[in-house]
Each structure stands twice: as C-alpha cells, then as structure tokens.
Figure 1 (cartoon, one colour):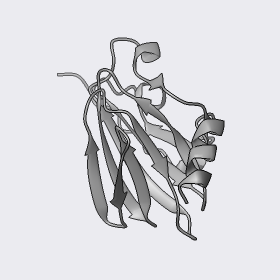
Figure 2 (tube, helix red, strand yellow):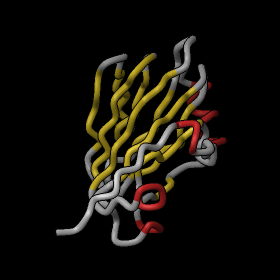
Figure 3 (spheres, rainbow, N blue to C red):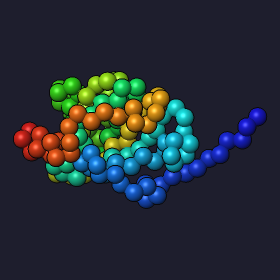
Figure 4 (cartoon, rainbow, N blue to C red):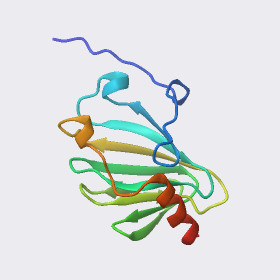
Amino acid sequence: MSATIHRTVSVRDIPPDHRRGAAIRVLLGPKTVGSTSGFMGVAVLAPGEAIAEHYHPYSEEFLYVVRGTLTVDLDDEPVVVGAEQGVLVPIKVRHRLRNHGDEPVQAVFHLGPLAPRPDLGHVDTETAEQAAEFTARHA
C-alpha cells in the first residue's frame, strides 16, 4: 500500500497569474501537489475585469462563485452566476468570465480530466486586451 502525502496550499502561497486578464491562482494541481486527475484554483476579478475567452479541449470546468456576481459567456451566450452558485463549462465550449459589478468576484474553478500534456489543456481565442475591450463595450 502506498502512502498518501497531504499538502495544504494557501492562496498566499501561489503568485497570481494575470496573463488572461485577472488574478488566477492554481492551488491544487500537478505542479503544486502532484495531482493526476485535474486541478483546482481561485480567480479574483476586480470590477470591470475579465478573463479572456478560451476553451479546454480535454476538460470540463466547474465554476463556483464565492462572492460577487460573474457573467460567464458560454459560446457567446451570457450566463449570470451569483454568489453561492455554480456553472458547468463543458469540454470545448468557449468561455469568458466578466465582472460587471462594483465589488470583486471570487470564484473557485476545477478542471478535469487533465489534458495529455499541459500545452494541450488550454486554447486562447482572444487576448486579455480584447477581453477588456469586449467587457467595456458590454457593460
């Protein structure tokens, strides 16, 4: 029988990644805890911020809004997700996350299964700048 190693990871342990337009932190994933079936993290979007549109060719994404109200564009259809609500983003569905409110949005995400290689797990369909422009036009 193999021993299981447990590791607790704090949001403060992970520097934010802003490449897609808001603060994204992968807390539990292959790089942080050696997970093999998926990964989980937190996104924080300030008022007016967005996470650029993208899709996952191999993974479903589960989004749960802890606080604030998030607009999730699913293949160009806006879906409003409030605090204590969740939404499933199916495999290959383009999605963008937007905060139109006046308070920060905090959302937890989980993706699974993992792609065969990390570089195959995420396909960007717009830049962070394009997402910001889209968000400003649709405020």
